[in-house]
Image (cartoon, rainbow, N blue to C red; front, side, top):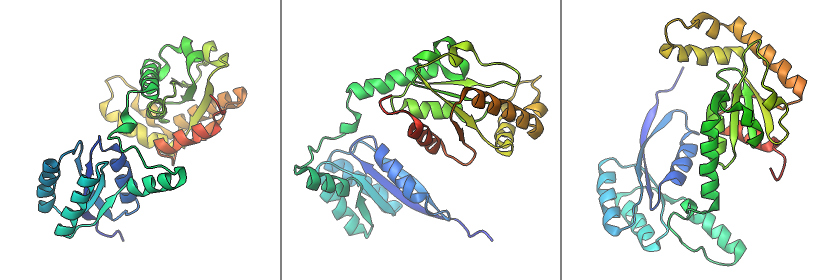
Amino acid sequence: MNKPQNFFHLHMISDATGETLLAAGRAASAQYKNARAIEHIYPLIRTEKQVRKVFDEIEEEPGIVLYTMVDPVLARLIDDCCSAQGLPAVSVLEPVLTVFQSYLGTPAGRRVGAQHMLDADYFKRIDALNFTMEHDDGELIEEAELADIVLVGISRTSKTPTSIYLANRGIKTANIPIVLGMPLPDSLVQAKGPLVVGLLATADRISQVRQNRLLGATSGFDAHAYANRASISEELAYARQIFTRHGWPVIDVSRRSIEETAAAILAIRPKGR
């Protein structure tokens, strides 16, 4: 018997974009399957006036408060406001900075939004994203050699979202669909530069995803063949033959999130690539 799901308010206050808090908050919330967080995000909070306005809102819907605040005065104000309202508060970055300071022997520079600086890494990510969007779903397939990673698999094996996630890490990623009975292009087979990875999933998983996609299908589309488990099994067998023939590493994405799939790909990527 399923337990009823409880809801709680999760307030995230950041002097930058709030991405760090969002990731930390969701990672923690995911551990409690019967408790769902109602997220409240307050980005770019950099003045005392803004902090007090935030707590006027929090007072209406009290809950857990997470924050990343470089300015120690504002951080102290948040702690004081939480104490006054009887709310738990956690400075997400402070314990990490303390460890860094202890090991490196020097205090942090305390730069707001330092992780979002327009440096070489930032432009590398933008370049990778542009490349990945231009080389999605077999587009510009003749340029496969220019990619860092090429993902290959039948429809609905998470090629596109995994490609975009890798691009956000600064990795130029192309993805190419496998269609039953159709050989892959020579430009991919002969490519020496990129790491080519085959993606697979169970027939049941792919059928489930494809059935959800059928809602927006155009008229004349063969919906039965697209989501039929027997047809999908045939597609998967064909894909496995291709992966084996070329000696490409294979990852089963059936029970993996996009992040886990990307991590598995990076784990087999040669160092220095």
